Image 1 (tube, rainbow, N blue to C red):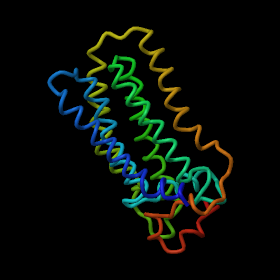
Image 2 (tube, rainbow, N blue to C red):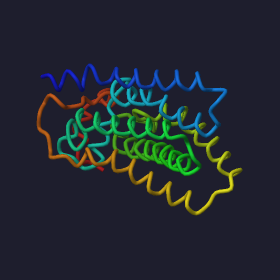
Image 3 (spheres, rainbow, N blue to C red):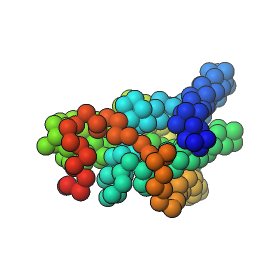
Image 4 (spheres, one colour):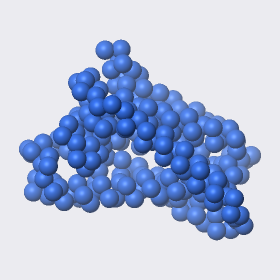
Length: 222
């Protein structure tokens, strides 16, 4: 019960506190930080908005992730409240380390790759879920997290690319970016490799997908 209280009640609001802190630091240092530092900070300011869209407003991201992963228990495996808490907490810690260190071209490249991967993933999920639930009335590619990914990450990604094109990059920048992307990817994917959890305390509801009649029957249909 204590773990459920943490993941379902306390932790979501901790993302809001994290985003507010990053925003406050960004505003305070607006006239001091270089543009690349501001862009990376902006990514992490978006964390609470993106997390809440995926979890609660409208929620349902974990359900679609698990469903598209072929899970027979899409409410809890491989993504459940505990694993996603660990995933996002790892990303927040990683972002904090980057901002404290100071954003280099390599860091900006790795974060641009992350933003691109996020947007591409949501577009892919949107197309696949639209196809999956077409018979249930789904006509758009919207999926939980798409709005904040497109409206928030796409402008940051576009500006990051424009900035990188003006910088003389060295091979070591790309190598370092590859390593950083690998670290972040591990932080994101590793929690989902935890042993299967059957506990009803850690489940996600269908969120956005609950609006489609008999949506649960779509499990296993392609």
